[in-house]
Length: 175
Image 1 (tube, rainbow, N blue to C red):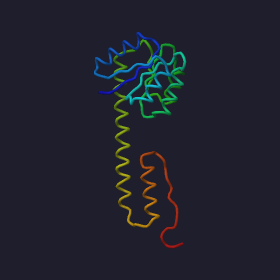
Image 2 (image 1 turned 90 degrees about the horizontal axis):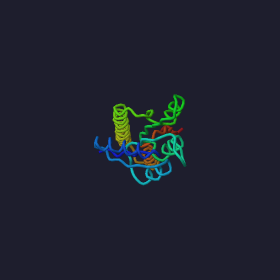
Image 3 (image 1 turned 30 degrees about the vertical axis):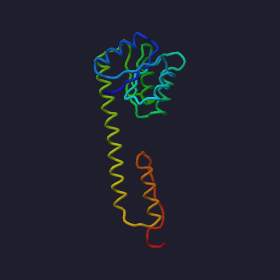
Image 4 (image 1 turned 120 degrees about the vertical axis):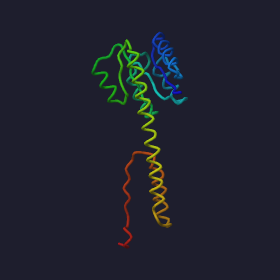
């Protein structure tokens, strides 16, 4: 089942969330602050992060930005009892999947987790399919010159990214 990281400085909230999520058959890890959460994300692959905003050492917004750099594909759900609409909008703009206010509505939380996981798996599947289609297109190219081999290698390298590539050069007419 999916592995969720709870990053919150309040032990009661972490333990309550852990109990609920484990009852729902999720595997759960806990972090007491943003620094500890980042350290765990560097070591393990998580399917989702529940991230509090107000924490000591490193707040949730800075942690969100750093997670986006380390693992941009992890869905992050921000939680807070001290935030307002502006904070929620800022969090979503910075890449959070959603924002839920404390006290948490457990039904909303569980639905949001399922939606985030569904979106994440769809994004992963789409990337795999794009790579597969790209490789098929590369194989449809006819020729064995060193230049064409180099173009095929370049396509293989960038096919797993969202980068756009412009291939230029002679058009085969010798001009």
